Length: 206
Image (cartoon, rainbow, N blue to C red; front, side):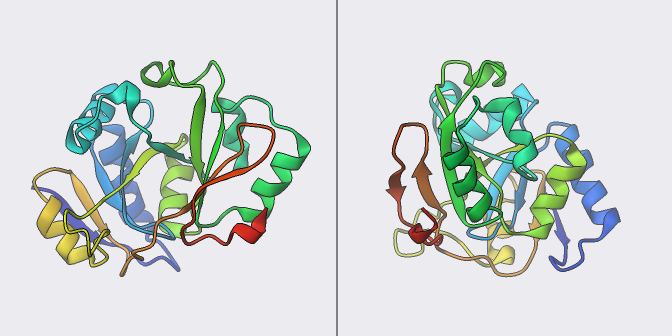
């Protein structure tokens, strides 16, 4: 059964963050708050954990559209091809924030994603997940936790999330109520920005 821990976003506890890091480093799955909906994620470098998430989501890992949560834009060059100044300015304006940006992937992508030409990058405006990623030292592969009920597309109450997911993951973070609107997805991999999904992030950022 998963562990359920409370972390306050304004001042995340060092001990609690260390506990989350340990779970991730051991190949565990974690549910955490973002600036939009709660996410399910694992350490990007752990193949077994990636397989587990794909299985939960019912998708083949190499075809999965997971996003990478980075601490800031300094991680970009690890997985993204060199981008032009205009693209970088959009990212700088929008992040941290409720956006997923599709960017051209480079040859350093983890082997599970080698066939992908693009990658979704998130830098959420949420201290808890940003601190986790910073201390982990590499991105967390992330996907939203969807509710089967179409009316409540995303579960927002951490206690209800725990009830539902406690036997599927290793740790659930209670970081307060989540949002039920997903991130705005913008494709910056081509010459012109393309809005894939309008979510919480304002498209005026373009």
